[in-house]
Length: 475
Image (cartoon, rainbow, N blue to C red; front, side, top):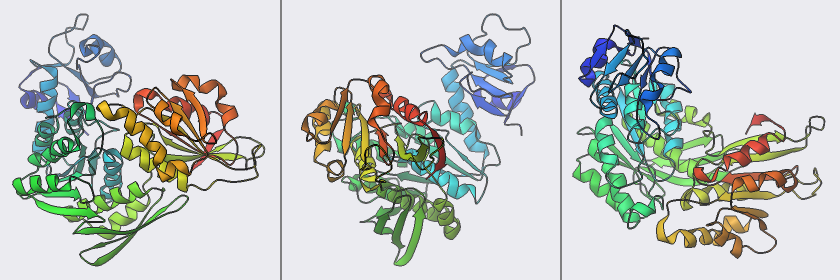
């Protein structure tokens, strides 16, 4: 299906099309480009114009550029604009304007990607649904997601993130959502903000982009929920609160099992019971918020709850795998929790809670007792309280319930110093330092968590654990 013709893209961007071409996708990366994509030559660490020839050779239908790169054929299919990022933004705005899709915008310090994926599963069973890829939620990720949206889309979920003040509102206005959800406000990106209240104000600005008469879905349990609620009133939105203190979708009970989370809730005194096929109280909260979004959209709530029950976490965000350590004795396994994509104090506490509640298996390895083992990397962008926030993990009941905690990075050293001797594992500056001894640190029957900010590269530890055997099933 054609996404953009040369004439449509030129009209949307105010640019000049060279040649008659069509594109059925939009890409910013030659490593993942597909045949027929419009390659957008953004300038970041490298100038995308340097890769236009490669993109066209790889099958791109055309390229969005601000100048004609050297070495191209005279008839190369191009769309020339004054500024490539501005052109992408205009393309995204045009894509949003031409569709009748009902759009959801999701932000939050923790859980926005998981919630977006939940909504993709829930709404995808009820209509043609488009959503952000991975964590494409910044100044280029949002317009890219919009520019990729087919005209016949019925539902769209746009993830919106931020690192500094003033970033969310312009992206929210671009999305023109019917419903906006804030998953939570937590200590993340504190380097750029004075306090949590400042983060709440920034998150609340997502409501500035919601269409008049739209919905604001708010986590009522967070410390600064009042800031979000006041902003929703200022923007004249209808409000839905979820959580233990939620007036509309109330969380009553969460039962976390080895591979399932069972949630009891209510909506205006009507009981709600749903399951999520992965453990975690934080997933229960995100799921309840997602159900509130579905209610605001007016879709089938029973079907949405069923779809939610089949959802599983995205790679690097809490996905669980069984790793077979012996190809002959296939009962010799360990469980791996891959939460290596990102970390802040709130998401770290939630992951540790999941690990602490996990069931280990005894008497199947060289160590008779199955263990709950954590590999924890530094949490970045926490500002002047970073050391204290890392040290504070030692006092969490979930941390105290673990058997071994391996600490990676200079900030995690403050946690390592406070751990009792029997819990204290390896102290390393980088993930790479852990890899040579990794096999000796683990055994059959263990449950292993890897979590840290992306720059700490805990994914290398996850990959090394996977290479010890084969993930034969997803829990």
